[in-house]
Image (tube, rainbow, N blue to C red):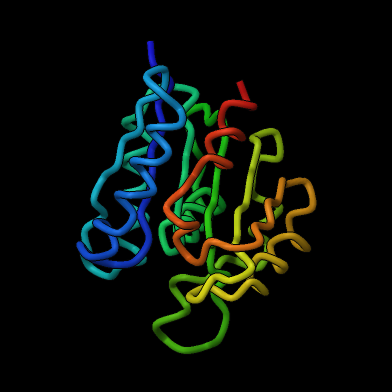
Length: 182
């Protein structure tokens, strides 16, 4: 039986979904046949934030036990929001977040994307949590990675010298960490 992974894409549309398909292909290729990577398209229902929360919740609840969760960019930040705001009935084997924005500011469009101030206390510290960020990410400033590192000291952080926002479409490092949790 293969190990179940759900990959939540970044951005808010089909173009972003298609861009992240290369990340999914890299991950599946490196992990091999003992892992099954599911890649749902997160539609923009209602608003991208609340619609995504529902879709992420549905994906997790419909998955088998010991699911592995991977998110990129907006998908990673919305996954973190979901996990910190909801009781999760499924056993999660690990959480892997790539180029994760840390939303701040008081603009109306930002408020629904932001983590609650006590989010770190609400995350299950027994679940392996990994963050990945390239120093040369042109979309999400590296300073966001530093904020997570300060607020989640029990998590594992992988600082990557180069690769941009898409990690050069190479998730070998993420795959290695996924294999290490088993």
